[in-house]
Image 1 (cartoon, rainbow, N blue to C red):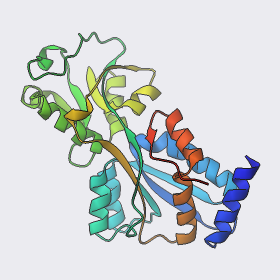
Image 2: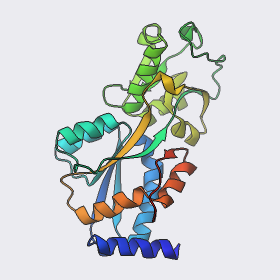
Image 3: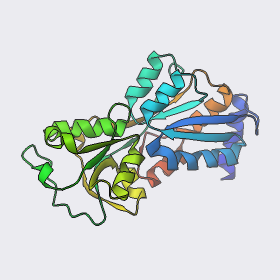
Image 4: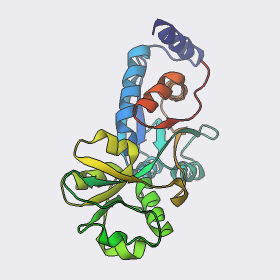
Length: 257
């Protein structure tokens, strides 16, 4: 740990950051809230640089950044929104990196009986449960877009069209299942693992949707570019890679320290 702290101090000096300077704001996809909060706490403890987390759906956060919301870094649950921000001049060119990956799962309430799910166009998904299916709003929630694509891939979208309940982000989609408002939901594997009120029924084959890739970028209008660069580097390091794995994510290759 002492060696790690020393390396971070040296990194801070290299980019002009003095311990205790500034406060960063990380706009982060809702599904990353727990892991980035822990990473930010560790980073702050080691460098003295405070980090605030603003969790929400990736699309909502991207639009907030373009509208002028003060943000220093952005973690998106889909490359779509980081690419869009680059087009809108909201992120520093060449700062966008793949940070980690996730899997899409079908969840059910603990007391809900669900038969074995078969991922096939011939499977009558509408007959497998009686209530509604909760997903993130596909318009701005990456988990919802992945879910909508997966349902369409198997031809299940039409049968379930009037039974979908779109939510403001993936955590809200899981909450609907936790509260019993929906029998089933489609969320990330990492979200399901955090809840004691739902269970994973099945994991969607990766062929059913685009890869669940999370990206990290530095906001062009950051008020603290040196501190933002230091945290950007830290989030891509080996220490955070271990943390990501503990939360169930698949980290991108960690950088050599």
